Length: 106
Image (cartoon, rainbow, N blue to C red):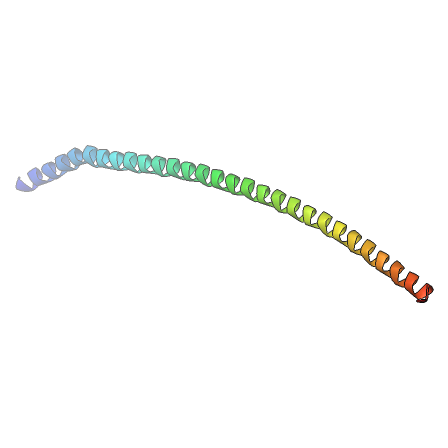
């Protein structure tokens, strides 16, 4: 008789515990889902932030490349002008030397 009551109690306890186990599992699954959702949101925000940082860095690099290119172009133009001026000066000196050689001192 006692054995029958124990079986009945065990069965009753198991039936009673099944909903609570389901409820516990359900709550845990909900918590996991919420945590995954938060993590996904954080990752999206970080990637947006990273994308913005990368975009800003690319814009800054582009500006620097443009500025550097302009400086190089200006330096090339200055060098060309300096070379032309130096060439003209050499030509005038050579002409002066040629004139001095052509006309002996009197």
